[in-house]
Image 1: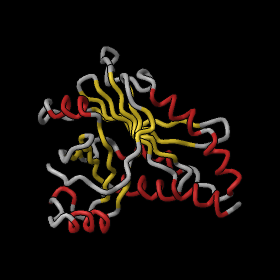
Image 2: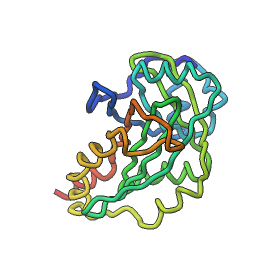
Image 3: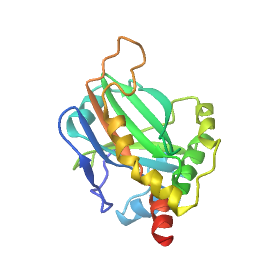
Length: 212
């Protein structure tokens, strides 16, 4: 799939070596339609009526996965919790010794709306090559019941609580970047490169600033 270079913000939080970190982007069906309309294209069939979780991959990782052809990734769903009580969902795609991990803060209402859509099966994962129009799309390739634990607790609205969660987010990102943070499908699977995409808790940050 070819995508026009977008005007959406891309920020590299960390890059170099076997691990890179950048921001993910969550778009609703209407936003997906508006994006392609702006480019003068129809929405690709595979993306119609779907929410889309976007990630930008380093060139080498993207090319490595593209070379795998139709081989499907192993997808792992895991959770982590900070000492302040902030819960995160880590969604890992593993293919041919490379991993991409979506890091989703479950204490943000917009993020939770995306996870709810994922649980309903109406979300696609779109991976775009860094600084390129090349992209590919993967369906949800895991048991959606593994997302049930994400809904055991509603996101907080207290700005002070959210501020404490935000203060510990850097440590969570650092932990998620570690090569051995999420093992492969089997014990013999090697992980030699990881790309992490953080979905920013924009709604929570807005609540924090409104509370000041």
